[in-house]
Length: 146
Image (tube, rainbow, N blue to C red; front, side, top):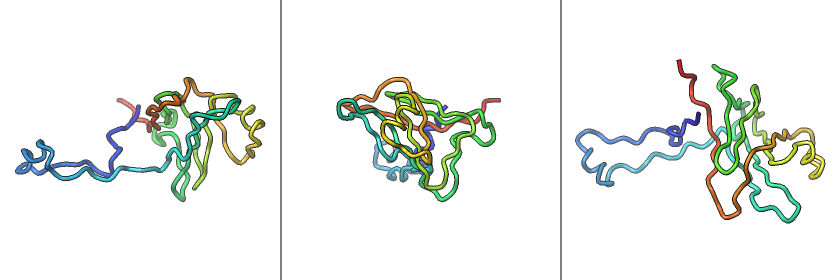
């Protein structure tokens, strides 16, 4: 799971006659990073005393974004790193929509922070966010292995 090779808009390559220069680090610059359609919009990793950690995800596009492989719907996206969470089957983020992933009971979080029912809240995740810094990733599923 996790197509990490898709983090750039296209593969950075060198022509065969320039491979020596490329290997010396003097080749073409890397391609631009690929962003979206879903991104971390907000990360609450160090809440005030009594507060709760959460991750807010945003669909950057004007079209629905499924958090699963449409060709294999049980193959869903996940969050990995300091916290782990696997998205449920069939979840789609609406155009320009947001959703929250929390480390506590979603119903308790919704009540505590008066989050409207129009915002999806998922959780709980396993793990905790490190206040000193760490890497978290939003992983898109690989195609099924045949």
